[in-house]
Image 1 (spheres, rainbow, N blue to C red):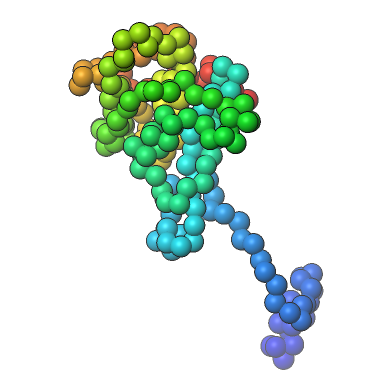
Image 2 (image 1 turned 180 degrees about the vertical axis):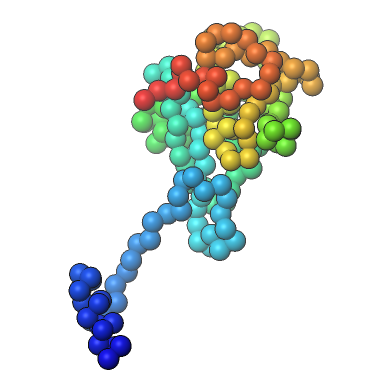
Length: 182
């Protein structure tokens, strides 16, 4: 009797019966997940790497699929490397070409400290605001980083916020809301 009720329940739910098995494509892991579970980090595949690039003078978030959860330094290195060919074709660029950065995670309050190397002579940039915004918005897209502080030569570095004011304190994506594109 129970088997008959189960069969009737399955038939009533609208799932058609099939004689042969068929391939099912499962959805990828949600982009909001912070790190893959042990089962996901093996051969199961890819995780999301969020990068903030530039399109038409505004920040544009892009998601790349990478083989394993990137460290903050790896994510920053990928950001500095700039857009892929496909991303360039989609109109994305970067204000960080030729920039040398290192990141330390774990400062108080889930913060990161980004050390900016001294710029080469004659490499004055007019898009440094977008560059700092790219770094802050990329790093704070991670669950383990809530804010970013910049240093140069180990000393606090004053960097521009989206409104043009300077800060040597912790920065978040909200400091660059004016620059975030549609």
